[in-house]
Length: 372
View 1 (tube, rainbow, N blue to C red):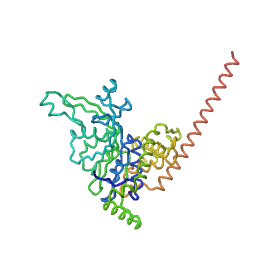
View 2 (tube, rainbow, N blue to C red):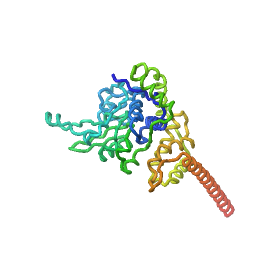
View 3 (cartoon, rainbow, N blue to C red):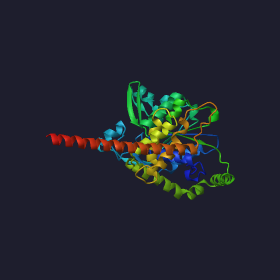
View 4 (cartoon, rainbow, N blue to C red):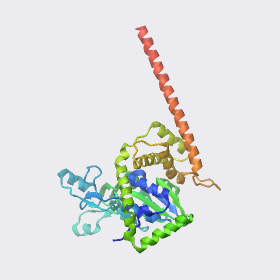
């Protein structure tokens, strides 16, 4: 069995690792696009993330890896088995599916099983890549070279958590809840803006210039190539701990709360960067909740919002001629302070309005009482 380079052994690239971890906490955030030059650990990080996640419990023989512990989100076959109490659950590794650039729509979403159609004269659905990736990680290298229509299908499924196939007399719906990770080298062309916006997070990675870090990368890679098993054992405890934190964060995500002030802060922040649409607002909120859950908290903070904006805004900023589109930390922090100040002013205005309304209501009641 091939040994995967440990996720926790990757030197630097903290923003990329954070984006991957938060999408693993809450897959419906919408995926990560990793843009960077060759040799910056893009594919290594994606494979390492899947390897550190614990095994999942899934219904035996189910091509969609349905979770037998719940009746929600089951495929049509497992729904019938659940009603009859016939589901048998076993363990399997977290799926990691590598999507080839040449993949067709039929291969991705699934299609009619031609062999059974010819031999038995019956229509049967043959699951595709989205079925195999359910509850796991779907990795697309050189996503900018993939057919735009196929990219649309991947992004739709990643956002909804469901794959719907209606073709050739077949109507099938099955769970497709996975972490979508795309990587690309900008030198080979970029994604269309419409597709770029559909990725929840985008991270730009570059080679590390600091000599000591580069030396550490050389040391670790050499050790891994000489004895992969022993090298992986050195990082096993750290990887196990990180995997357990992700699982705990998944369980705690729904308990993470937020206030109206937080929502106003997010809205003011995205508005300050003239971001089109509302997708960025939703991404920042969901990411902030995942960040809070990962750190074991039950409410989001300004820091969560700021860290989430670092991942959600850079690829959504409007490009101007002769202008650097990189999101500068100083600019983000300044806009964040202004957004929070506006949120506090809005909260005070709302409280004053509520107070005035309550005073008016008391006056009206007093007048009505006197008249009666």
